Image 1 (cartoon, rainbow, N blue to C red):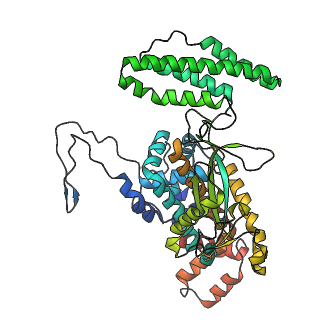
Image 2 (cartoon, rainbow, N blue to C red):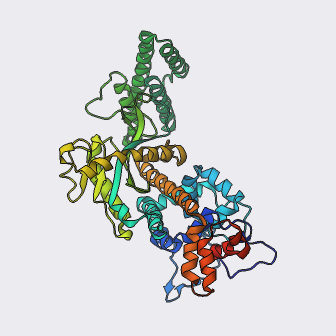
Image 3 (tube, helix red, strand yellow):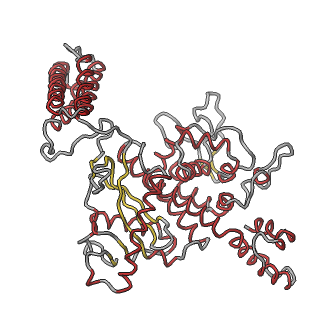
Length: 502
């Protein structure tokens, strides 16, 4: 049950003696398949060969000991995989940042017990930037493995019936990016600053940087918009667009004279500046090219979900799949370029099937809203139920369709409690990782709630199966008739026995 039961330190107290082992997080720590998780992702962290660096020799017993006089370039030992995986689980389960989860881990013995520690460590497990590198190495398949294991634990602990995995609810939401609200004035000022900085790095001397005028125009445009003086606002934006175009042409001209290498190094900056200048001149897209809403995040899309309070959201569309009953998430995937909801259903069901393959289950019936109409032919073998085809639904399906909106509070909890409201990870790759990790954090919190809801009777059933027959029959009759917390349980000390059995 514990991480290192063989090691005993006379001068230090074990964590299992410091915390209440009846806490749901302590119970879950002993139920998670840590060895399977580590074995599934360990191949992503193998030592890679580098040019000019000799790899260690391997024999029947592993790496041979190499005695060298030169200094080793191996660096410090890696942080154990279980600790890093636990940090990702805890980060999204308890809505912490990378810095926050590392700092809170050092102050919370229960978190350290969940991470496999035997003794309390009054220090951070790693630097916050280590989590960034770990996520990149883990990859999309690795984080999906973390989500799949939460589903397996729910089934193994009988917190959800396996047949419930065949009926799912699918809906989409917007995972917003951590960007400022995109206005033409702000984007043009950023383009001017980036052009001046790129020219300075390339050694290009500009006639004028328009630094003072650019700041003044950006400030004026904001004030005119606030005062609803749109004619003056458009005049200020037009002047900003003129400045950006003048700088871009001057840099392009001088870079071409300096050589092809300099010109290629500035292509990305010049391309973004020209896109911002062209899109600020008209409301529609230019030549079918999507608009640029953030300089550092070109993958951001403008998505309208029909909300009166928030007409437009800037980020990426995310599909969520949950069980019909039980509210357990069985799939989460990010879809860029704002596709039609129905076109994402096949990919969403494919991911859910892969995540549930260890449970020998697959989606057979999916309940959706009207945004998924017209895709029955693209999903053979799956019954797509929505209110757009009332004549083809059975009476039972009409009743079950009322539960489709149960996924809406799940999406609300994902955003409010598990960090899906804003994605701070970089690029499309970061969007995909973040969506799956938020779902994994939600499932961890779901497991904790279900373990707390089942309580000691849940552990009592395990204890009865383990040691049944070793006590007199009258003891088992009294134990079965008792309730958790009553005087009989406390006098016999069976609560501690249930705990040890778990």
